[in-house]
Amino acid sequence: MIYKIYSLKEHSVSDNNRGEITMHKRTIISFVIVLAIMGGLMLRIYDLSGRPLRQAAERQAGLTVVVANTRGTIYDSQLRPFVNGETEYRVSVTQNPKAIAALAGCVDGAVLEELTSRLQQGKPVVSVVDPLPSPAEGLTIYKTPMRYSGRLLAPHVVGYLDGDGLKGATGAELVFDNRLSQATGKLTVTYTVDAVGKPLEGIAPVISNTLNKAKAGVILTIDMDIQNIAETVAKRYMTKGAVVVMEPKTGRIVAMVSLPDFQPDTLGEALENPDSPLINRALSNYNCGSVFKIVTTCAALEANIPVKTEFNCAGYAQIGDIKFHCHNRLGHGTLNMSDAFAQSCNPYFIQLALLAGGPSLSNMSVALGFDRPVFLAEGWKTARAVLPSDTQLISPAAVGNLAFGQGSLMASPVHIAQLVAAVVNDGDIIRPTLQKGTIDADGVVTKLPPAPTQTVFSKTTAAILRQLMIYAVENGTGLSARPFDDGAGGKTGTAETGIKVKDKTILQGWFAGFYPAKNPEYVITVLAEDTDGTGGKASPVFKYIGEELAMLKKSREMKKTE
Image 1 (cartoon, helix red, strand yellow):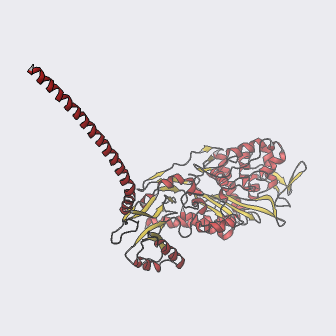
Image 2 (spheres, one colour; image 1 turned 45 degrees about the horizontal axis):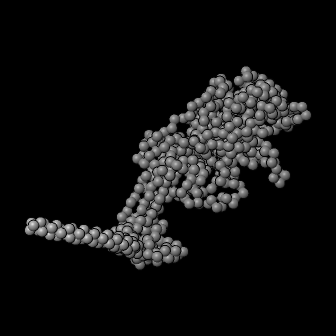
Image 3 (cartoon, one colour; image 1 turned 180 degrees about the vertical axis):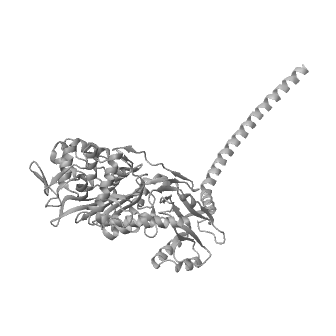
């Protein structure tokens, strides 16, 4: 009995303890939950209250200012830069009285006032300076490249940037925009700042300079020396027009001029100029006139019509009820092909084209590219040349009109240069180009090979055409285009536009040819827009460009021997 009573008491105490333990656990768990909730609330409060402090700390870590930002470089064929070639000085300035005082003598009053106003906000500013300021605390000087400086050669070829100065708008700047943008270089300055973003005095800024990346870019076929010659001579004799100078063997255009021209810092004036200086006339279509007689002659020779073939010129040619006049209203009399080419006799070439046949003339024109644009690089092309349709050329009058480059025929100076190059290249046509290659930031050049050629007419025909063109310069209408040394071959042309201004008919003057006469090195095409007389302004441009090219060659040869 005693044992049993003891056992009951023992069991009763154990149950009570178990209950107390359970309640104790519940109390602890509740307390932990309350602590967790309170901890979460405290962390949230700390986050909200500490965020401005963190942001201030981040500001204190640094403030970065961009001093200069430039894109890849456009080079000439000799790796001379068209852009990024010159430098200027820029300064980054903090709100320091000594720095502001040093800056005062290097910028004009209006600029200084604007910079001072911005500095009052406590942030550093960047400015171009000339002359250089004296050293001062809070002022740092940097030498940076200028995109455009001085007189830009070949502005229509190089082009210009958009209003923000970030993207190419025309020319090579636009065509190679992706490549030039990928070669971006930057100069930045990072200041240590206080909690409100103001640079701390006495702590040197950290400079990051990747401007050398912008040495990468694109290499054009333009030769600055030849471009300068072509521009100088063209401006001497023309106010509106175009010049194309090309290597016939490679198709590389070494000079391209369009007048009137512009400069990147005069775009506003150019936009208001009624003569449209922003248009690249070398890539634009014009009435061709008698330079197209090269094509007519080629078609006739390929149709086995001999040079000795004679026709009579009475001062006009009659086709049905249409009368086509010769520039010599008295007539040339009886001429063979050589004399007719030299004298640029319209009636002769009308009869020659009719003898060869409209299809022969049309096919030769197409083969020589007068029905399409010329692609100078990927995404860079001329206007599409315009050729009468086969249906139109069923009419003998349309064939006669095309024979001397009139009617609906339209082509650019580049098309004409391509034509003359085929004559030089023994009948092989080559595509003109403006891109020679690319270059990376380390100066490694990748050249593009010349475009493949395609045979359009025979070597025999090409040889005869060269002789006809030389004869035209020596004894015909091209005499005023003859360079002093080494001779040349070429063809004059005067195209009637059908446009009248103040009762005056607008004419386009042409001269297209090769230089020198023997072993030609260059094809030169000149268009004098709105001119008077046959080749009156185009011929002397050709002549003096040829003479200057000869002098340039001698000068370069002398430098090689030094």
